[in-house]
Length: 383
Image: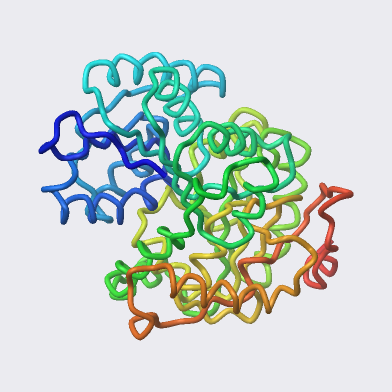
């Protein structure tokens, strides 16, 4: 596998690292830390595309995670998938021509990931994709299209789990391009968990430990349909009568509440978006976590949550599933060993345990014939 080509023999490899949305920031943070440590070997240019334009969803994450100030902010802002992708494509192409990087580094599966990848490969700049090979099997998810297209043209594919390599090989990616490295989001969590646990977030929100649920909700499949969103809130309001539901509201969801529900807010404990450390602190003492995020179950497993139930995902599919052919607990054990082996953090520093919550999906009112596992007893009881 060829290494990135330096502009001159004695020059550091110039890496243009791209991040655009909150999930990207958690993945880029440990990478930037390593680039700084190896500054004699790498010259890193950090580009923030501005895909997440909300201050609480961008600036606070850079501050909490100690990410350096971006060298460039493209400021693309909100828009449809096509508008965001097109804006990043046009703006980053000019930047690539100007800065002439040796390699473009992208993470995750957001629109910025795909746009930066397309711009780079058309200029014959090799791309390294961190968190490659994850698949949900659901091509109705915009992120699934981003994953497949990005992986198909990347030169280096860095995976977080063994089944990602299986997916890539099945799609015809040469084995020498695939490198198992572990989950950088978990590295970020472990690096900041102790700081998060010292915060007074739970008390500040008037909550008692182990006596509340945490809700995140932002996927288009959940919030863009007025009827679907209304039904979700009806069920969640019923849960709230038994267990307070804390709901940090994503800007997309706030907009949906205002536009599709006429501004009628659900009877939940709603807050503004939280920073990374505050949200970790909230997870740590939650009795239940309900999410349509792909990353929250894994963070929940490692942050030290003492949940009577694993984190519940209310999506018909998840890109972090490992396939129904394996037992979930066996998979979780394998992933614990794999991450310890791949990560730079010694096993003895790893408090907490990766439980099977990573694999748990909760189906709400929408199911998929391919991915249906059934609805938990708790969900049946509420409905």
